[in-house]
Length: 290
Image 1 (cartoon, one colour):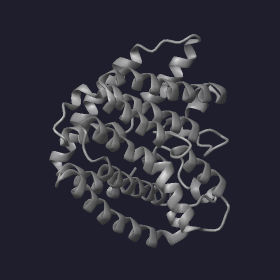
Image 2 (spheres, one colour; image 1 turned 120 degrees about the vertical axis):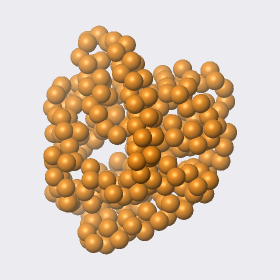
Image 3 (cartoon, rainbow, N blue to C red; image 1 turned 90 degrees about the vertical axis):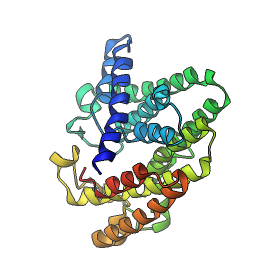
């Protein structure tokens, strides 16, 4: 998979350079707002969603280097969701990517406002690119749906409110599909809309990949440590969250993740005409350690 990691790094590095430049231009009054936004945006990470977006455009033979602004919008929304997810009222985690969470570094109020600002900024960016025509407006609409009350927010609400209840596979599927899956599928749908390709096939792959991503998160929460994860492990069990480990047990969860991997590979093949990059991406998600 060395070729895969080289390609992944090409996308990631191009996005990272763009991100650094845009963050350098951020200004606010009071200054702490822009500082807290930059803190979380620049805290590292694999940049999974921007990479998926750029790789899908590349698979469609588009000039992906010209589409870094929508990728930035994706990362702004993902970052805002992480800031809010770490808050004491939500998952109450003091660490993110090995650093103090935003609310530990800047205080709870400033963290909430940084997340709010990033969400609004994402749509400033999408408006910026919508001058490109209807296909960009459709891409923006796809991201808005994925991030909103029928997507990620619905999943987060279900995740929060199902804690402490009996295991329920249907509720788990809803949480997976919305809390994680929608924002994994969004970059693939956005790329398909911009390239004017089949967004249904892209979405089907993205939603299954989101399921696999969350399954591995649940498994790692049980099996990994803070140094590896970059956040506090064991919190799902501590807060009695609904996870695949709670529903299936650790061994059953691993078997389900293997089955989901096979499903993802078939859907990737259908969406991207035997693209080795996406097949390798699936394997990376299943085999990740953090």
